[in-house]
Length: 136
Image (cartoon, rainbow, N blue to C red):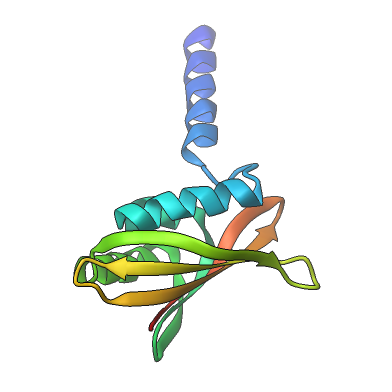
């Protein structure tokens, strides 16, 4: 009985650490994983790397969203603007040490968006706090 409990506990802990991609991820890993998620138009994967409250912007429309609502908003954007290409054009850090990335998102219809992503550290985890897509 104790062995079964220990094995179950072990697997639960293992799933927690494997299923929590932001845990102990470096800023660069978050940036790389986010790029892959955006390139594939996967809101489900991208949402794994955002803070519990994330600022999303799409042109004039901006808002602060919880993770589940943010996933819905991102899925809607990717559905209406499926990706053709996405690349980073600039990576940097503010004077305060906050990492940011500027990218170019091209939708399948040829529309291009300038993207801006701000990475912050919360309780030792690097997460996306702001993500913005502005039509060029």
